[in-house]
Image (cartoon, rainbow, N blue to C red; front, top):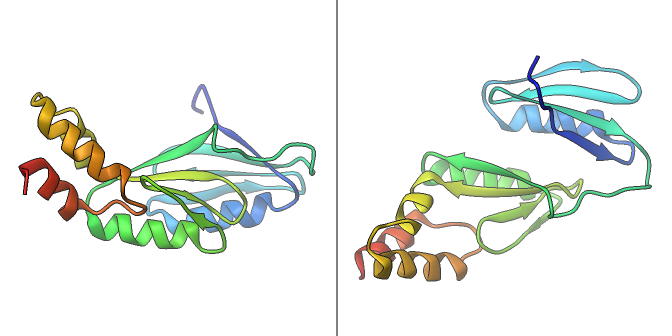
Length: 145
């Protein structure tokens, strides 16, 4: 068992959310379900989803960052996670339960931290104009064309 497990509060749809998340990410599984909670693993990380009622709601103050290998993964996760939720700026989506996700290609961090501050600034400015992150457009910004 991992030392720290994210605990996600839902009104009454913990099991539905857990089953959805497991269906979206490869190498994931539902570990246990009872009337109050669901324990699941996404790509090696365990989570607990809890039916706690309407007292608290999820906010963008806590989000799950997804490190994507390519544009196909960005495209797939962007669409699947935002279905029934909402798309936002800079790679953020909110799913149908209100959980915020950052769907980000690995190269974004690399290019934003380029030792050349001009390149890094161009990439950051390009990213700030995007909803779903577009790797080709980021690459163009990085190259300066």
